[in-house]
Image 1 (cartoon, rainbow, N blue to C red):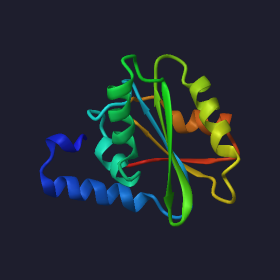
Image 2: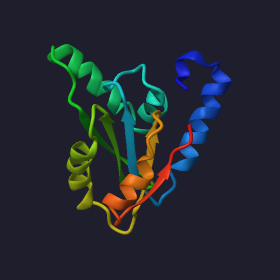
Image 3: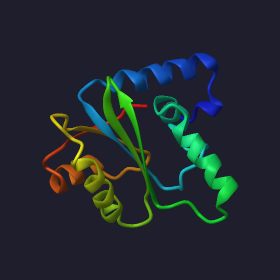
Image 4: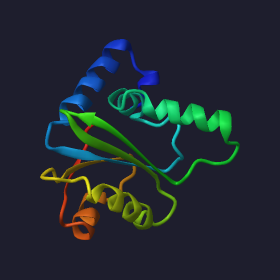
Length: 145
């Protein structure tokens, strides 16, 4: 649910539910959508909050400086429990595997002992099963929003 249509109490509850899932053992999040990155995507407000406004800063910069479509995949980094945390937004336009390969290559060098990656996707594909087969080094879990 996008918080833009929720009451302040629902926003607070949704944000708390999301924040509670980002425990110290979480390496990052794959946010897979059918649309390009925008403020209208479900989860935007919650993820932007967790990443200290980096996502909205990026979008603003793109609107001001670029007049072309956003890239298919974007990756953001922040700190969570004093450890690097990533968020990879991937626009699903056919096969996501190529975009995921690029993102996984970026994060593999920063994994350390943490292997848990959250997946948030609005579509009905079974990303977790596919990702576990493709990247057995990591543990994938659905993010509940």
